[in-house]
Amino acid sequence: MAEPTAAPAGQNFKNVKDVENSAKARMDKSIGDMQHTIAGIRTGRASVSVFDNIRVDYYGSPTPLNQVANLHVPEPTLITITPWDVSQIGAIEKAIRVSDLGLNPANDGKMIRVPIPPLTEERRKEIVKRLHHVAEEHRVALRNVRRDANEHLKKLLKDKAISEDEERRALEETQKMTDVYISKVDAASKAKEKEILELK
Image 1: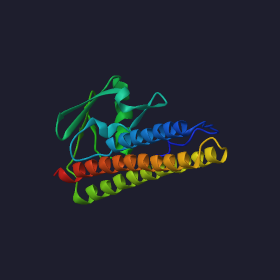
Image 2 (image 1 turned 30 degrees about the vertical axis):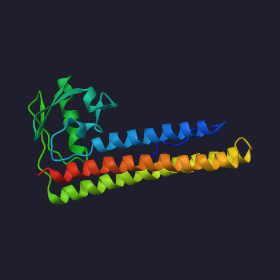
Image 3 (image 1 turned 180 degrees about the vertical axis):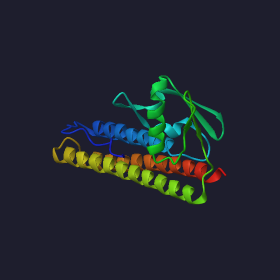
Image 4 (image 1 turned 180 degrees about the horizontal axis):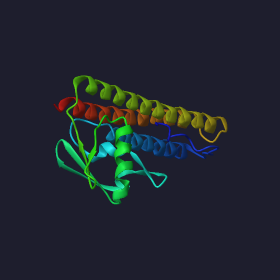
């Protein structure tokens, strides 16, 4: 999940700036991936983003739910889903049932109502554990980007493309960049955890 940050194969860096730009782009991508993933982790409040990771079998093709239906939150504990094509109502309901969201959709032939039950203490703890796992995966991905960047810097030094001073400064910068991105992961994880634990 956290590995869309893999380095482009056989990339050739000419200078420190190339290495830093590549590392920054990969770290940005990892943070974007994490934000998308945790948006799909449900809290006790109804939010259409809980369905972000749901795919519906739309005529044999797995399609994001929001591309086959309108989703609304008419009240804090209810989400309604109105399929654009009513014949897909069964496929949508099934996709929600088989997901790990623990929700119980009901359809009236035209619309699906998904009540969002309050989370039990046990369920909150399970969700928080999953959140921590997602955060840790992304911290590891960021450290892998740092490791790759450091290897590229060592290669530039070995190839005499940069001086030892430049390498040392660049290694420090890479560490600083990694620290900034890891603190973004921590902040996003803390905010989501608060959301999960607060709502009664």
